[in-house]
Amino acid sequence: MSTLHTHNRVAIQNIRKQFPALQQTVHGKPLVYLDNAATTQKPKAVLNAITNYYQHDNANVHRGIHTLASRATAALETSRVAVQRFIHATSAEEIVFTGGTTASINLVAAAYGQTQVHAGDEVIISHMEHHANIVPWQMLCQAKKAVLKVIPISEAGTLLLPALKKLLTPRTKIVAISYVSNTLGTINPLKEIIKQAHAQGAIVVVDGAQALPHLPINVQDLDCDFLAFSAHKAYGPTGVGALYGKKALLENMPPYQGGGEMVQEVTLAHTTYNDLPYKFEAGTPHIAGIIAWQEALNFITQVGYSNIMAHEDALHTYALELLSSIDRVRIVGTAPQKISILAFTIEGVHHLDAGMLLDAHGIAVRTGHSCTQPLMNFFHIEGVIRASFAIYNTQEEVEQLAAVVARLVQKN
Ligand code: PLP
Image (cartoon, rainbow, N blue to C red; front, top):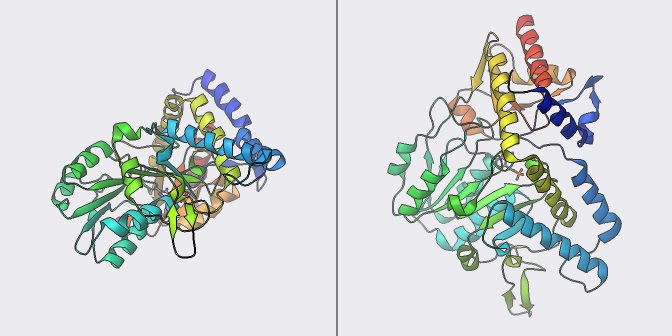
């Protein structure tokens, strides 16, 4: 594996030192954490920001005039600007804090869908979506008597793009598509999809959950209408995420949940709603998580997406080389444009047995359908073993994974 030079090794070791959770043993073996697509580990800066908030600034936001409330509010709003800049949104009003990707997609499906989708209209998703980008649209279509259409995929795990042209009609209101597949690792040709959808007058909702950890995102360049993403998959805290939406669309949407914070004036008979983005932020948010999210974004900026991509790509290529040379291992998802997710099956070995044996060696991987059951059905499999790599993973960890898999195959 020539791409990982000594200099890189030192840099990666320095990065690893920032992650306390990586310094532990599991079943007596050093932890090899390869379940990053489910959630990444968190650097000290993120952990410190959470502790610091609760120790010094803990107060509710936007509600008090006392010092702690002002500090907490200022820190939360600084985070909003950090998120805005990170994804190159035009204004901080376009960033709605949510509980994560799932909450963001549900927000669009409920609020945008409520007024813009009617009986006989169409919503398009793809066959490789995470359940979070399937079920909210099924619920919307069911409620509105709208039609849910699906972009088919190839055996390699790429979208069959010519099919989209045929699926799009003047009745298509929404195309909801993942930037990157959480099971296959496929990077979808978003710009082309967005261009085609807009040409038919449909808006595009992007599930960016698996893109944020690996790829720079520019919502203006993509021209997507909504982008849903989570902090925890990109070194940030769990339970926090955002919905980016074009201002004009957010302004025209009715509120999603009612409650405190999203209102301007409430009488018992009538309520007027707050401005963007607060109209969509009912209730007390995960203040500590939102504030700490900035630190995760800083971490990515400091390391740099180009370094992240180069390192993860090298690990992925190496893992692919080692695993595909093992008898009875079948790689699931072989698209030419992929991020560092490697799903595979082992003929004659159940994925759960493989997962348990790997865990016994301190190796954490995902096993099962990875919240993509329609994809499992497509490949006629029950589940996969999924190794997903982050910036802190090493060549040795890839070798350990491959060695345990090879032993497993030999014994079964
Ligand atoms: N979409 C994709 C592609 C994902 O990988 C995930 C998480 O696994 C989600 C959506 C849901 O993210 P969250 O659980 O943070 O809401």
